[in-house]
Length: 206
Image 1 (tube, rainbow, N blue to C red):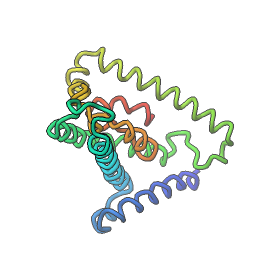
Image 2 (image 1 turned 135 degrees about the vertical axis):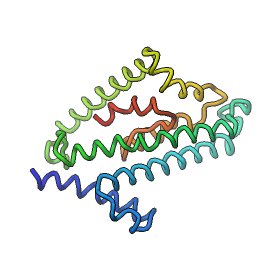
Image 3 (image 1 turned 90 degrees about the vertical axis):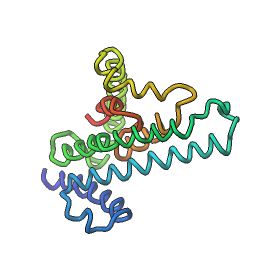
């Protein structure tokens, strides 16, 4: 069992090396415990994906295709986008904690994860995938619904999200779905908007 769990540790260590070696001097991250290296990798990767995908989207939609997809008066102001980025950056450390904790649980044998598809076979793998997606979508639906129905949760967590989802304030930095999918698949779930999205993302990491 220990040897099998080491396969997961080796995999996350490999991801850590790829990201951290290319972004930071080794003396900054090498002394960190494995758990914190994973968190740092997630933070750097999440921030880069969030910023890069948002900037590319803005460049294409707001500059190259100006007035093609959305009217000029619907383009959010630079100030609104900077505020959205600020909110996302406050939430990013917490977003990055979720996949880091998930990896910790997997590496310590607290979950039923498989290192290779050959360990379970394609039929079981596809079956697990369908069940996983159903549970996740169901969980996200109910998390989001409760964020609206439970007034303190809405007031203190979710309301910020709704400041930025109007036509003339919505930008890729407020609800970057591409980032959400990529980062969830590779590292972590994130819409990059606020703390309430962290709550909604919990089903992806269970």
